[in-house]
Amino acid sequence: MKTLKQERNGSLKVLVGVSILGAIQEALQLARERKRIVTFTHHDLRVKVGPNSNLEPLLRDCIRALFGYIGKEVGPYPNVELTAAERANDARIAEESGDYQVRKSRVKAALESPRNEMHSVSL
Image (cartoon, rainbow, N blue to C red; front, side, top):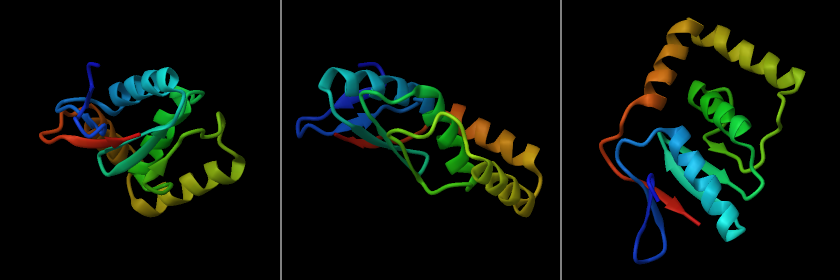
C-alpha cells in the first residue's frame, strides 16, 4: 500500500500528502482484492469505493461535492453520466455561489495539495 495504511484494529488511514485521486485508486484496488466496499474520508468528504466502482465518476463526484453541488458522501457507484437535472442543479449552484473559475481553481488546489494530518478510512 502506498497511500493507505492499515492499523492494528483493521481500519485504514490515508497517508499524509495523498491526493484524492491516489486515495481512490488504492481504495479501488483494495475493494477489488477484498470484494467489499472500502470507505475513507478526505477533505471533509466521505468516499465509498466498491469492487466495481468506476474511477472517473467517483473523482467527478468528489469534485462536485467539494463545490457543494452534492452532499459530502460520494460513491460507491455514481452514475457514469450526469442527468440533465443534475447538470442544471450544478449550474444553478455555481451561479449562486459566485465566480465558477475561482471556485474551480480552489477545488483543484485542494485536491492536489498535501494534507498535514492522517485521514481515517474504514472497511
